[in-house]
Image (cartoon, rainbow, N blue to C red; front, side):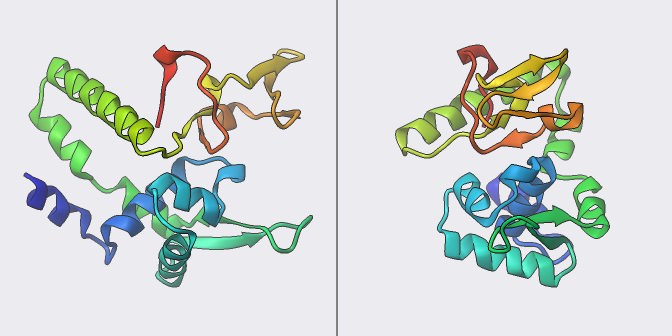
Length: 174
């Protein structure tokens, strides 16, 4: 099973780390698309993450955007080419077509529980969707981040956030 899934991950000249980084960047909010966040998400070093990002940029899957406020800060945006490669069937799509809805839900729950447990045991940071965060709220009936003291777009509330704090155990994400 593992070798089949590993073989599936090698497409469009992307290795596993590159594909995982690209997937993360596509799901993350602007604040979480920095090299340090990619490193934390992948549980790797900043140097390794930087090399992965350089390779993705060289291949045209992402582009670097420098902060206008702090020229040292960068984030990476997924290009149209990156979005296209992510839209292709991945291992999860292949598995989900082979399983019933009930089997897929059981598999997702088992994977979520296992992942959360491993992250905690190894002292790694979890990532979560903004609208499940303890800092997510509303101001003037609009989404708001109390941690950063900023208004949010509806799109941002569904993206991954590297400073996520679980609002409740039932809304855990990774």
